[in-house]
Image (cartoon, rainbow, N blue to C red; front, side, top):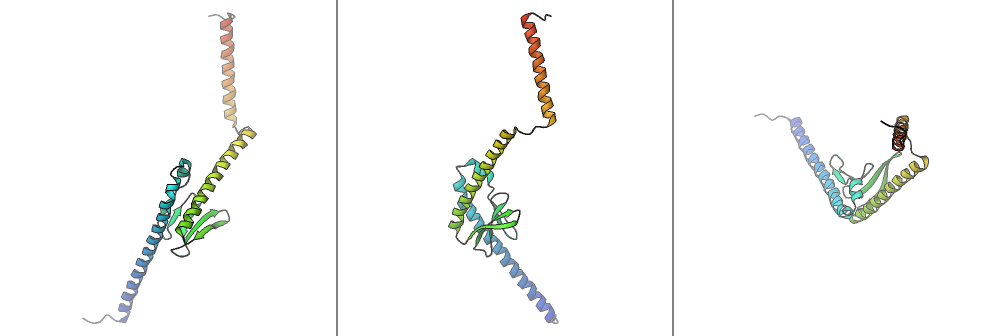
Length: 173
């Protein structure tokens, strides 16, 4: 059997090197996902007593090229710039903003719990503000709602007059 040549040997070596690189990359992604899972598992017991927090905050690890621990719709924790570095980011109108970063799991856990508490208070404040705004502005009704309320009031008024007339003997059957 004749030698296939130096190019074929180099092509095989390049493919083996690419396979090793992909294996290392997948291993790195798995390591990031495991670290984010450990963070999630350390934070969940703190939320166990609060039903609102469990409903509001997702706390789900999504794998991918860059695994991410989603906190809510706009906040997540990623392992960047290196696989041992936790980074809490928030998507805002100006773009993605780094809120906090550390290499310590315990520091990220403490900050994340504080962050979640503030987000919950912010949500409660916005809900109360919305309720007060609706109260002060009288709410916003569409014309169909107003027409139906007027018609219901008119109907009850007519029935009340008929009932009064029957009760006083002014109207008989």
